[in-house]
Length: 119
Image (cartoon, rainbow, N blue to C red):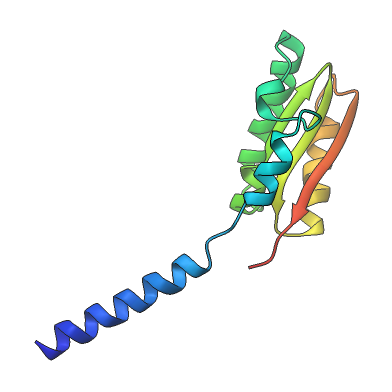
């Protein structure tokens, strides 16, 4: 009985520390609700924009050197302009994402709206 109680206590403490380390995106969510912020729902609907985003997403997902954060970056393409948004782990990841975006055919400009996060 004492072992079960100890195990339960350790588990509860672990869950408590996990809850304390969960990211708080409140400020980012507030920022994205402003009308000027480019969000995924404003993605271009042209065949060109869709193709650019799909090709870039494939290149990002296939790069296993990128963190999960970088592989899940938001890619928003409007009129050939690509905006990258979200967290990345390092300047190197930012550079890799920018390089991949610039390498996609049809990209007119790339906007880097990523943020480096540390855990």
